[in-house]
Length: 113
Length: 117
Image (cartoon, rainbow over all chains, first blue to last red; front, side, top):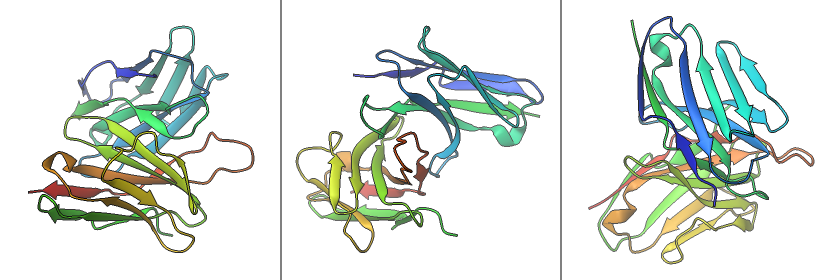
């Protein structure tokens, strides 16, 4: 079965720096991969989706890459701000035929001013 | 323009009681997913429903748990004879699968936090 690993549970960076979060999966390459943000006590909020035939996707200060050879996605936040502090979740389809998602445990980002 | 709504937001039950969690999807969405998040754990898929049909329940415990999404009204996740291990946050998400594409975003509700005493 598919497994997801997010590189670290916590990441602390200074305001203005670029945060880079890693998501690795172990099994088949998914048709797409998604990143979500979750704040304490709230539900996840969709950020970006990248498809298997896309190398890179951008949205404002966010950038996602998808390397099916390495079975890895990188999630970058440039010019980070304290308001970016949250837990970021990587998600994939839980099987090759479905749309339900499996999630990594998340990386908690703290941006200090 | 309401997003996904879940109620109650917090639910306290004693062991052996029943818990009913409700989810109203976003307007126009006919696909509902339920996930469970245990403390210090990631979100775990439980069940995927369309109106009046269970599409995928591979993540649902075989006993005590059931889900429905009737033609009218919200989706319900029902847990019978709750045990302390059922204490978790339960999230509902909805999506709209447009055309032949299955690559759609899921919109999450705020969750129901179940505490079993």
